[in-house]
Length: 380
Ligand SMILES: Cc1cc2nc3c(=O)[nH]c(=O)nc-3n(C[C@H](O)[C@H](O)[C@H](O)COP(=O)(O)OP(=O)(O)OC[C@H]3O[C@@H](n4cnc5c(N)ncnc54)[C@H](O)[C@@H]3O)c2cc1C
Image 1 (tube, rainbow, N blue to C red):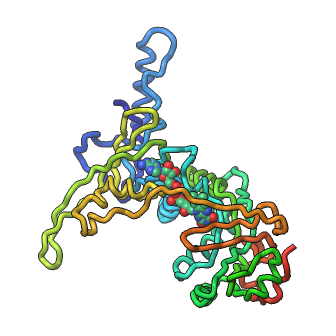
Image 2 (image 1 turned 90 degrees about the vertical axis):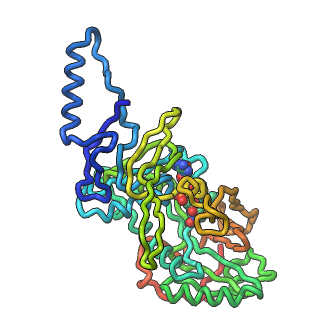
Image 3 (image 1 turned 135 degrees about the horizontal axis):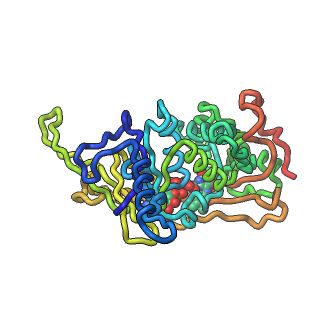
């Protein structure tokens, strides 16, 4: 098998090539040598010039410090932030392997692209606040020379969460945490709700919470495209293929309690190439599982869930592909064609409405005054 060998930038990277591996060592002027050989063959062979060395540009590199399995928004985001850690260009080799470049079943393509700050854990609120800031400054984060600026089509629109009597106290406590973390969220009584959204039935509603900024939705395809374009400019490798196997090596180590343990680590990823039974081995130091709804299958390739029942190794990653639903309500008196949109996810019930009282772009949150829910006005 003839493979293209890419110039390696691993000198100080995470992975140092072990001498004596079956693919041998590296030569920095490999490309030059290949071109010399091509010229020689062309001069010897009769007839029209032909490329006797096949094009291998679609193949993954022979080794990569990090292999990211899955090229959805999460995999690309991990690759982006890893590359940001590089202290010199090409210091860390990152390969993203994606089996379906149409993203036909990937959550990223199916997503509604909504962003919300209304969570109960401070970590999630902080993540979402940072994401809002990232989206607001997308053309700084993902700028690429000579590429037009990205337009995420951000549609500012607050999430409206409704709580029954039973859940009102939890909602109140969540909003307290959200405000402590810096999110602009307000509580609304059923009267305030009726006043602002006359088309909503408040039957059974004891309390509502409403996001006043940094909430809305955008085009997830645009984000995916922007990340991909940026990663290419940063030197990230992409490969279309399916990760089907990990090759592991075991090391026996003594713990501080004098217990002998066996540690397994992945040192090679097999990528099955598209429309082919051929696989390509990629030597690596770190594998990132970003396979979305198929993450449990990738974890299983690493032995996770395959150990004795009741042990950590015997615990499967509890992720599986399931159909998700997003509903568009028939609401002729509602605020707009695209809204309200309702998602019902395991008991969580949220609505969006299309009023312009919040935003993602424009002024910073500090410039906005804390709005009084009583003055939010009514919907159109
Ligand atoms: C209907 C719907 C609506 C949603 N709405 C929202 C929303 O409004 N707001 C929000 O924040 N989130 C929303 N989400 C969730 C959000 O879309 C996901 O959390 C996010 O896109 C997950 O990204 P990901 O990269 O982890 O997964 P994905 O986008 O699914 O990417 C995983 C990728 O891994 C690839 N892959 C899998 N196995 C392999 C393998 N063995 N080898 C190579 N590649 C492999 C797949 O082909 C896939 O492209 C929604 C999801 C759905 C389904």
